[in-house]
Image (cartoon, rainbow, N blue to C red; front, top):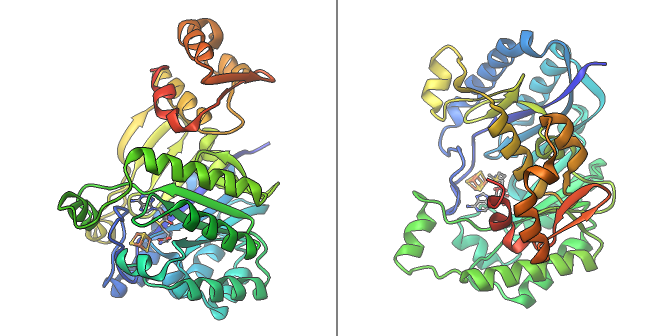
Length: 372
Ligand SMILES: C[S@@+](CC[C@H](N)C(=O)[O-])C[C@H]1O[C@@H](n2cnc3c(N)ncnc32)[C@H](O)[C@@H]1O
Ligand code: SF4
């Protein structure tokens, strides 16, 4: 049987730049959209030999804002991939979009291209907050986008929201989750806002022009979100990811399970044949130079173990002890007896069906760091 891999495609174009965003994305680069898609095909050809014996079981078109570009580019690229690579028949194919750039014509083209999952960036249902974040849409745009996706036949839809924003209260979180539940979405990603260096938000927070909730308040808001999501039938399967039963994102699960994946496009990261590598973040370099892999790092048994522990403990299902023992030829319980004893006494971890789980995700970083 052929080995399965995920394929990530980065589309680095946006209408405007949100004040908190440190992802590789550009506005005012529309003239480079077509050359970029041509380059993506060249890069995919570069990797052809390497993945010819593998089958692509999921594709994630992320960004940036993939919905911002003409849907013909997406359709053409997916046709190219299906014609040149082994794509599993029932592969999960996701695309990310912003509410203002999703419309019926694009949704029809995406469906025709085989896309079966759409992730929509909402972030907040408060229009004033959206404006302050420099988001290019309103709450009403989101409702329109979801309606149009459903009319075209999309049944697996995610919304991204941010927790820890200014003016967020327990009540506003409850209203947000109720609103999303009323939209009958299958998946909700709820990310704690990160203040990334170099972003306008970083400067605004530093100058006290924007005051964000302190850590304790942010944690309490996150816990309220978790409870509300649960009440509305969204079960957590990863620290920040919640879904209706059976709608886990297969592409991300493969990543958390340390499956192989190829990332193409600017800043994309890959894990193939026990090797990590990444792409340039420079649009000019990507468009002008012949493609080359960057920062190639062959995994060592230490990095592999650390990654396995870190990624597994982010998951609700926890760390598979049998899998660890088989992969790394050592007894997990013996190797980490001291740490496990300490964490078990503090009731921070629990064991179920040969899996070790975190009981309190609020302190997940501290728990994970115990193993390094
Ligand atoms: C990079 S965006 C791409 C999708 C789309 N352009 C959007 O804005 O929704 C993917 C997700 O990353 C999350 N994100 C971006 N910057 C973040 C930050 N500084 N802190 C937390 N989450 C962030 C947002 O929730 C966003 O929905
Ligand atoms: S739309 Fe998404 S990718 Fe673009 S700047 Fe905003 S958060 Fe970043």
